Image (cartoon, rainbow, N blue to C red; front, side, top):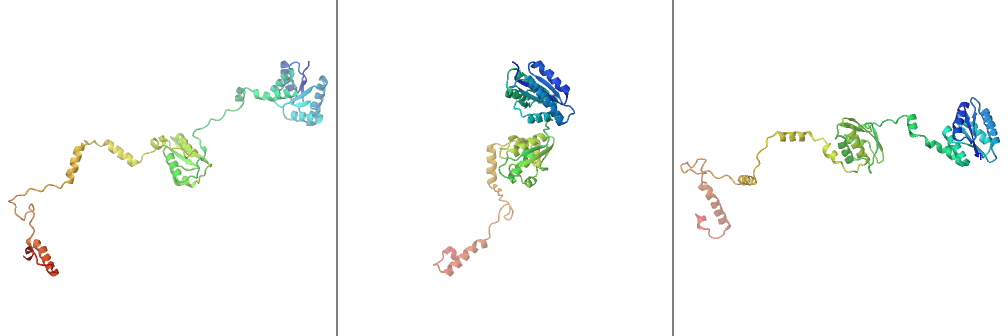
Length: 328
């Protein structure tokens, strides 16, 4: 039984159309495949050529047969669409797929007894069977991604960039041997970062130059993407520069000789000795009274003066007889 679907290869090159028919005939020799060339013909003339070829093929088939037009591009495809519109035959369809592979797949399906709908699906599915190595040979290789190229990051904070997160971001940016910029401003300046007025979801462009540009870009990108994330330990300690004054003190302490450490008993004795007053100097009886070693005795007038004043005060107040010691 002859297959119910035939094919007409419409191309702007008669040679190309005949070549496709030659290839398909080796795969499905029992299927009708006819060439139709319309090179350098206008749209009206090309439509007439295709209509004539369709009529010739219909005479070879039964009333239940169908014809699939396979066109390459340009005037050939437009001529096929015009013929389908003019004839209005439901059994006349335009195959949508690669010219050679689609025609071969459709012819093989028709040879196996598939109906028109199944043949059209086979033609469309032929585009999915291109070998991947062929595609890589045709398409240019994808450009390599430069890890040091500027990056676009979406700010992941829940609130606008305020002073505290800006200070944290600036400290991270200055912790590397690289000059980092965010939207073309210095990422190490807190005021410059706050001047950007960054809001949640805003896209930021970060760039870096220097020996540690890659590490700086990764750290700044991670901080901007998730500003609520904990500060990485390596950034907080190893990558932060120590103040110069602290570094100088540390080097001086390392170069100074170590002093012997005192025991706890020695430290306690030294503390108690500092708290007690020094012992008095020994007194020599041969030294004169007025010398510096023996303190001079207080004068009698200085001792009796307060007593006399007290006695005079008691007399004025009138508090009974005075003691004998006060009257004297």
